[in-house]
Amino acid sequence: MRFGIVLFTSDRGITPAAAAQAAEERGFRSFFVPEHTHIPVKREAAHPSTGDASLPDDRYTRTLDPWVSLAMAAAVTERIELSTAVALPVEHDPITLAKTVATLDHLSGGRVTLGAGFGWNTDELTDHGVPPNKRRAVLREYVEAMRELWTREEASYDGQYVSFGPSWAWPKPIQPHIPVLIGAAGTEKTFQWIARSGDGWITTPTETDISARLELLHKIWADAGRSGAPRVVALDFKPDPDKLARWSAEGVTDVLYGLPDRSTEEVLHYLDRLSAKLAALDLP
Image 1 (cartoon, helix red, strand yellow):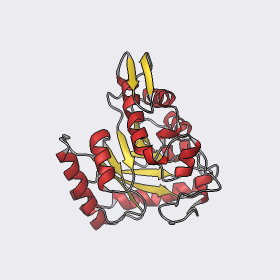
Image 2: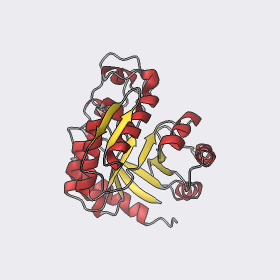
Image 3: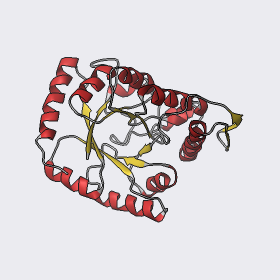
Image 4: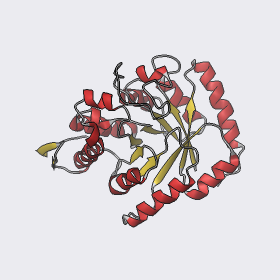
């Protein structure tokens, strides 16, 4: 089981570069950041944790660009995985986003993972021209099209939402396969999407009892004929040895802990305490 950090970025507090560097120095294996391009003031979409239009955190309105953040982090680190929890690919041009992700993977030495969401904020998606009831289909085409650009010398794609003729696009990612993880509620619908088009699941902050969901994910994965096992990234709040041991046995591969939106000094103290707690655990 690997331990990582997720920083809900904002224009306050510690920078992504400083946080990623500190996390790598303390032995954390991955560094994740989120994405929201903007938050419409007037919304019909309810936030998953509040159940209405209110936001649980004002950082939703202050989120930094994830790819600029990860590029800054890549420049001051050597080993830590660079990922998103979660990015919203359908809010971008897929050809341009494929170039951004490939460039970051190329320059970072093959350290990029794409954590993607379908987008709970359907009002935000609407401003980007994405039909809310088609967001899963749009994301599937975006991922398929980007994989064509990442892997083929002459790439093309002909879909309902993405279409381009034979094209050259470099750099190619260093990794032969950029992992795509889906951050969404652990439902049968989500797991069917992952089994068909993804590489793993990122849990949501409101999901704490995930045993039954993990069993369902592995069943759907196997039924789809996928080899191996999906990667499972679980969000956690406080290290508990019994829970972590159970998660490990059930197939959780990574556990993420969130950083507070505080000063650099305060975050470094938090990371010191967290890394000491994790190092004291006797886990597989």
